[in-house]
Length: 249
Image (cartoon, helix red, strand yellow):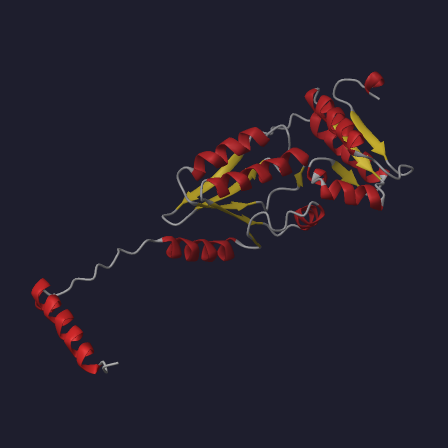
């Protein structure tokens, strides 16, 4: 398949006539995708049947591959990527950050895509802010596209916050992202909100619950402390009373 592939090309696989794929086939797809991405290319899959779709979902590979409903959608996506490549477009990640005692609010100003070209930079910056704050609110309103590498980055950050007892809240009111997250079953990856205000209220509530109150130590007044002699007398009194209550056999 890769014999005629050229550096930087987009490969579209049409599965319309493919009814089944086994583990060896999935391994081959993963290997092909890895080689294509290594040469700045991309792999897209279209017209997946129901059986293959279930298999890909079970193996979680739907989060890795770029899957489209039709050949036209995949071609259009490739054209958009080509147009962006021809333009002197910067994929440097620029963030607007606001820190408070309870959370850090981070809004992505640039770029409008979370893709392979900037995922590592984005991931490193978010991890840096997570070292300073236990709760981060990520505003994705300016994002219009997240590719498979971007999705893998979000999954990586989800694992990172769970391992380090941190939290990330997502804010977006974007039909494209809504459809994308549902398609890849990412609805429950992070708590999601439509506005900053909703996320801030949730973050402040979580921060309030996380505050550790000082331990209350129970102090027994000296007058109420039972001495050893009093304790011994009490035991003797109980024993003698118990003997009186016993009836002879």
